[in-house]
Length: 351
View 1 (cartoon, helix red, strand yellow):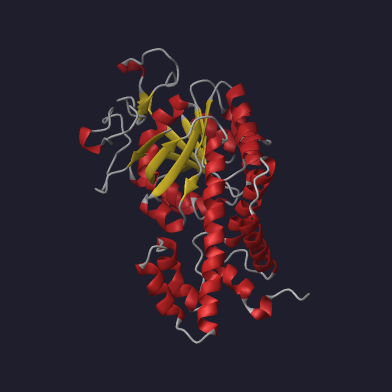
View 2 (cartoon, rainbow, N blue to C red):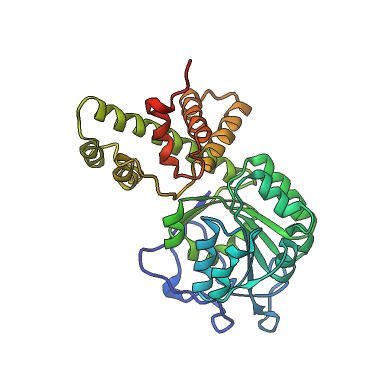
């Protein structure tokens, strides 16, 4: 495993043939060594073992498929960094803000990948990830040797391996790179990338990952990134359910839940998630940063992963039931902190 952490200083990397290498003051201090060549100027032979001569270089085009609550700010950060970005989304209107920033639009995933050196995909669930990658006019149809496909969606390992197999059958390289972080970290370029797959592609896209995130891990074989993300989100979902119980219990016994949030923030169980979401939860407000339906999907996938290796996860299983209750009461598109509503008497499922 290797990990690279972005320095806290602000980066302003420009994707241009006038910057064939990342300037020294933008470089990390990685645990593992990375090539000095930036992807901002790459050739169609970028992933071959042959040396790339200066005259082979061409401006890198980056594709981005899926412009939802996460994909849109991630693509915006690439555009603002000066990258030549081509976008696609099922609902074209979601592309318009990015087009206004300078992105180009294509009518299908296939057209995006055929036009780009590297394509990122951020889709809502495994079914969407497979359809966009492998369906009619899907991304795989536009891939060929010298191209790379980076799936940053949260899916299960089986789905990731399926997509990876079909991508590699085209001669292209594949990297799974699910992210830890929600809307605000995506906007601020502070995501954590949990990558696995082709190491050559990881090294090549590292500068792009560093525009969109603060830390990147390389975890080895395809499936490891997906598994890590599901474990992380399983923990997060269980923590939020328990925190919700605490807020409601404190109020019911006559304590001020706002004070509980402050007490928790000062102790050993302090977590940024509690400090950020606690104040709005006390007011029964759940502005969406990570939709509840996606959290429940990740809980379901994590429980499936645990089942596949016979690992008991009773706490996560109980939390998952709360998310399912919240979904059944129309809270799917609220932030996942709205799971607290499932613990209130009016939403309790009668026996």
